[in-house]
Amino acid sequence: MNIPESKLPRVVVIGGGFAGVTLVKTLAKNKVQLVLLDKHNYHTFQPLLYQVSSSGLEPDSIAYPLRKIIKNYKNSFFRLAEVKDIDPNKKQISTTIGTLDYDYLVIATGTKTNFFGNKTIEANSMPMKSIPQALNIRSLILQNFEKASIAKTEKERQAFLNFVIVGGGPTGVELAGAIAELKNNILPKDYRDLDSGDMKIHLLEGSDRLLPPMSEHASKKSEGFLKDLGVFVHTNVVVKDYDGKLVTTDSDLSLETETLIWAAGVTGAPIHGLKADSLIEKANRYKVNQFNQIEGYDDIFALGDIALMSTEDFPKGHPQVAQPAIQQGKLLGNNLMRFINKQTPKPFVYNDKGSMATIGRNKAVVDLKHYKFGGFFAWFIWMFIHLMSLVGFRNRVIVFFNWTYNYINFDKAARLIIRPYKK
Image 1 (cartoon, rainbow, N blue to C red):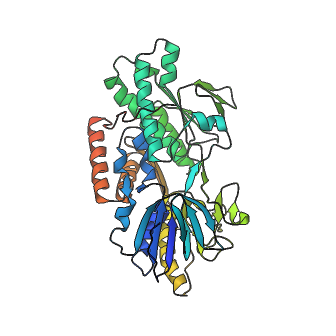
Image 2: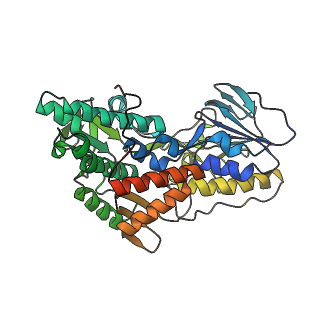
Image 3: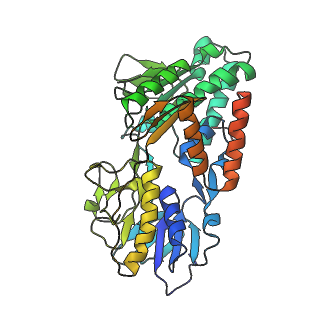
């Protein structure tokens, strides 16, 4: 890997998501040799992926080069690689570009889409966990509009204009709202030969309400906002199969569609090599203590979505969202220096700052500890927090400009089929 030998302790970080990047920025200024590994050379701001897939933003506005994050730190290195195996006895990892020894190892690999073992759905649906996948969805949506405009039969046209989203969590709710805005604001202008009333957006959720992790107030508000936008909301409906043409469920509902977007859940992305009992198999998350040490290891840590830290307030682990990952990354960055210097580390205590979701223009829901509200003010708060959370001043400027332009003109400027998607 061409990493120079050093007398400094070597900390290897696997994953450049929220947890990994926060850890690197906290730790890199200290006397350690830091090596960051990721299969992409950029950090993705995942909360805004749905805006890329719905033509609201270009991908470079929510991505940031990982090398740029560490460029000012002398003893920090980045390698573009995928980690295949961990050998804790040798204190060594195997990757697609070679092997590397470590003194401390941090796993921050996040999650991947969970299809719950359904191979047919996995083969035919559209996941949205990465920028390439979001671009695939964008291309497919726009290609469907083009094909609908030349469809020979009403049935064929309807299949191209039916969009089914599975999963009523924040990703599904936000994406449904964004696609509804395409229907209401873009389709009538760009595709005048199509009747926008023919476009149907169906959001399917297996539980009895949308946004299950949030409050009842947020669920009811978001459902009302979506229905106002023309989205068909189906709760207590579980998708059983999708063959690329027909969605079948555990109810009488079946839908013919060329597009099924799967936002129904995630599972951890562990790495082979650690003890079987260090992993909670059902969730594919590593069991960690209050210092983020993986059970059974003193020098291997897990952060963010891949880590399950059971506490009195969170017996099933912390929510798999950005804030726990960021807070764990910052604390571990400081705790690693305490471990190295033989000092007592500080335990992790999660500061729950609340949760939020946006459903479209002037519509959002916010759950804070003592307040729950929705509407324009919630939407404004959502925009401000997401804008300030982006990595890099350039990205903030570009996103702010795009949001302002879209708001004034009722437009989504990034509706480009750069690379056509083929099923």
